[in-house]
Image (tube, rainbow, N blue to C red; front, side, top):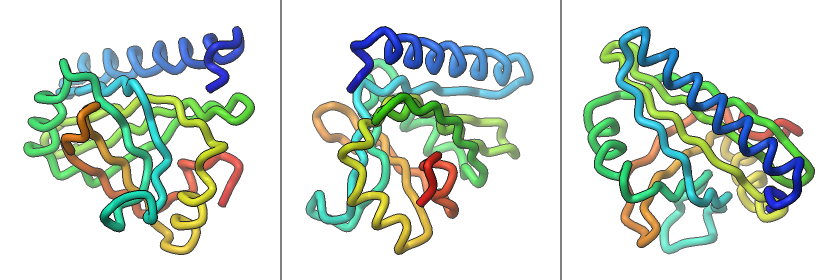
Length: 158
């Protein structure tokens, strides 16, 4: 990713700062917030794996894996918001999924190299839905979130 250029570093830094501010603000309002600062985010089309799974795949650091699993088990996550910043072919993104009844939130934070996203974009255009998957580096799946509108994930449009 272009995150090695000055612009990319600044965009990634701003994304991390925004996520931190968002988490702190929500926590002050009584929310239980788990933040996944993904080491890697892959745009996975349905044909990429053994299953028909597709969406953004966030590789969570090991130190938040248990928190993510616990949050996913405790919440129903019926709402989401997507915040994007695009720099060249890199998409810096925050996806906030929430369960307002239990005041539980998960912030998925990462950078996506959009040069590898054509298969995913085609799939979400066809299906009209999107997923965010969280897993560890060894491939252990921690959970998934369903999004009924893929448009906010792709700022350039579908």
